[in-house]
Length: 368
Image 1: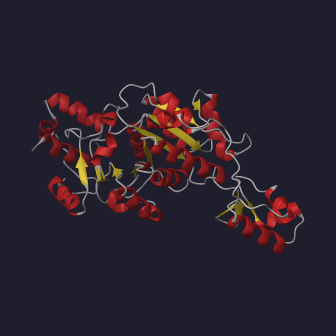
Image 2: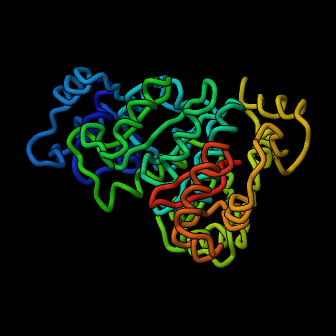
Image 3: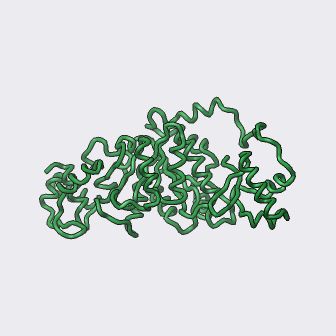
């Protein structure tokens, strides 16, 4: 048995993890020797550990198992305490070793949170950073989409389930797009493992471990995002947070992080400025700084003169439209326009590029 095969076998076994394997390897002089001496060779699902069949199954579905014995195990994660003893990778394994920023947040995101996730991810990915997130709905998914929208943007999705038990199933097509674009979808769990309360904190540990910095985009005070940020701090990662409204429960966690010392970031430039001084970034991760140096400085975008002028109803409606969005009924109450006028003005503004429609029949300002 090789060291690699022993790691895979231990990953299938019950009641042993990274720390336990390290102690056994130190005691017996290697991982393979530790496996030979290990008495409880029982798989989590019951029955004996069958590491050969596990390797065969992964090869059939195009999944690579990477262990600490492999040269392409991501060094950033390998240096983290409690790193996984196996990673199941669908896609390009090498992308896991590139400079990365993790972005995390609530599943029940506001329009503001989704916009910021997309904006930060797309600009950071365009600047050469790999965007890591948990492939959950809300902030995670929008962060992945933002990275995919950038030219040559790369992103890594980390699952809280096995690759063959993809969760959430609603993001399966997004996972395929990540792989097809040159990124990767990763899990530390053997095939067949469903998601559960234990698997998500483990997933969050990998998300933080793969990255040089972790950005909380939008999160309630009590949430999985806050656990991820604690893990990031324990691992010595740069902890950052995007501020939100002081009266928004969705931003309560981010505001608490900033109060407790997390770096407040208002734009991807803030992130790049903080990370540019870190050693070992490699080629490409500083492209944003070079690109930004040639761009005009300004906090607010200029109004596009190509937009056609607005009539009085459209002007009235625009005064009540925000980043958060409002329903047609809310706009009727706020403007005193009739439902027909609001509907007509909204459709005209949509065609002029001045608003966008959100789920739930909400109208909001366009991104940026």
